[in-house]
Image (cartoon, rainbow, N blue to C red):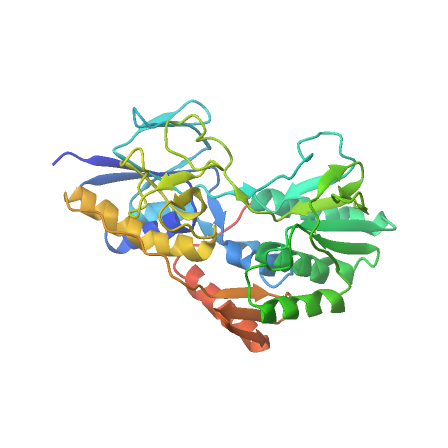
Length: 375
């Protein structure tokens, strides 16, 4: 039997779980290669806890190179920069190319950059919460500078779960040690839109009690030294952390793959490209055309099982199975003070026991993988 080459582009949650499965049950007749820019990939669910000092970096990063070794796969460190889908060739920085029989894309996403953020002369720092390694390095540098600054206004852009958790984590980390720091949570629409009203109310109470200024319904654009709303009001800031909606990094733009309007891979119910059935996509990079769902790690984890089965079925000449997204998903928000908010459907719970529940779930997930971190 001819050996087939499967290339995994990116070390997202779905691919990490796939490799974990390969340790127990290898893919017969396949050579698997993972391409990732970093040896260590973060588990996003624990990032607010890391910012708040509840975890260390090596507790929330998966060691991809070791995971590949354990699963019998080849690990190649590099950025995917070009895909020729018609000729089945993936290229990485440095010029190396990989011909594949099947490709799976799980490279994650970056925060959207609102109007004006591409300008170089902005008078303040603008940093995305992703890539996580870059954000953590910036945060470490900021803590070195803060002792000599009389004041520092820090904004978090994005009113979803990520922005809410990150601004609360930054408050816990910075404001007691550096009284000159003020925090602002800014975004279009309302706080935690799409979450139950009880979750929104709990979050508002936390923001108010911790003196975080909330700016809702602000279509923010960049002006020198701050953000400006559509009504002309300026929020003066020294730095902005982007926790906005997901966008791809653009390397698939000229790939030949069918993409959605934002540039994510349009996939069918089996998570295969709608234009190239030898290409899969998972996690944020996949847009399920028939049943669109949020870009969230909750769904990426479920993608892994379908991806594993379908690769095995293809190797055996069997039909692929369909992915069926859950109608309701569990949302757990870390308030960064030893408490958390949880919701599923219309049910909402909150308190210290919810944080311990979230902590237990996160630890259970991470115990599946070798861990590590390097600056």
